[in-house]
Length: 60
Image 1 (cartoon, rainbow, N blue to C red):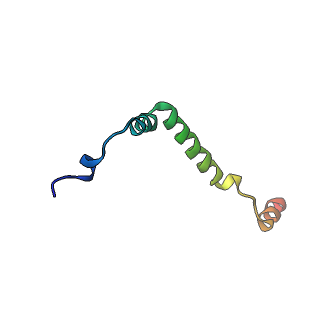
Image 2 (image 1 turned 120 degrees about the vertical axis):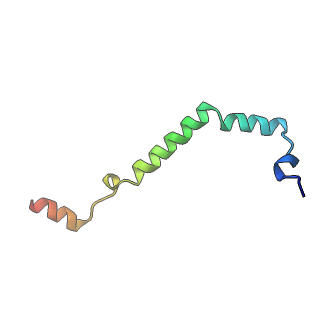
Image 3 (image 1 turned 30 degrees about the vertical axis):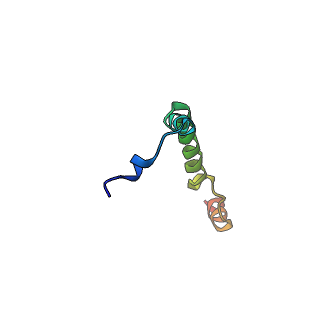
């Protein structure tokens, strides 16, 4: 069994186009933008604060 799975894959025209797109700058730019949005969504700044925290801040 010397044949690896990669040797058996035949690159069709569609696969070549998909591979080119996946390595293109436009795709990488979109991925980075979506990761930045996800990170921004998950930060503590964008989460609603609880009523206890609001009361503590008002007391200051």
